[in-house]
Amino acid sequence: MLEGVLIAESLRVGAEPAGVPLRVTKITRVAVEGAAAGQPGQWTLLDFAAEEADAERPAERPADCLGPAGGWYVNYNTGTEACVVFAGRVFRYPRPQTEGRLPAQRYARSLGIPEAQLDWED
Image 1 (tube, rainbow, N blue to C red):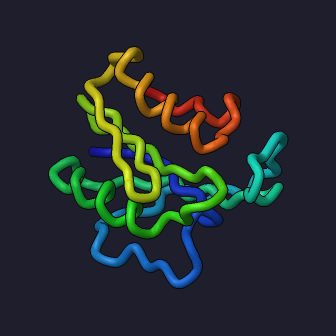
Image 2: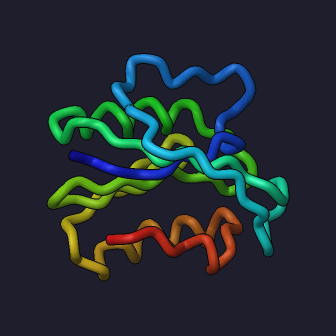
Image 3: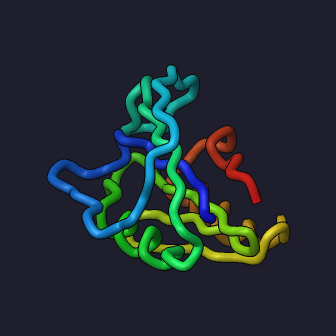
C-alpha cells in the first residue's frame, strides 16, 4: 500500500485529479500557524491510500493539479519509497534515506515553504 496526505486547498481551481485510484481514509480540518504567503489559515487534510502498484499515477496527476502559487506539495510513501510532489516537479527517494529528502527540501525552501511544513515522513 501507499499512503499520503493531500491538502484540498492546494488544488488549483478547476483541477480534477481524475484517474488516480485513491481511497480517502480520513478527512481532517486544521488551523495552520505560520502558513506561507498565499496559503489560507485553515486546511482540509485528505489522508489517502492506494495500491502500491499504482504509485506512479498519484505523482503524475497532482503535479498537474497543484496550484503553482502558495508553496503546495503532496507527499506519500510506499513500503520502499518516499515521494514528494510539487506543481510540475516530483522528487522520489528510497525510504528511510533521510538524506534523500534534502533535494526536495531545498526546492521547497526555494518556493518559500516554511520549515515547519517540511516535516513529511520518510
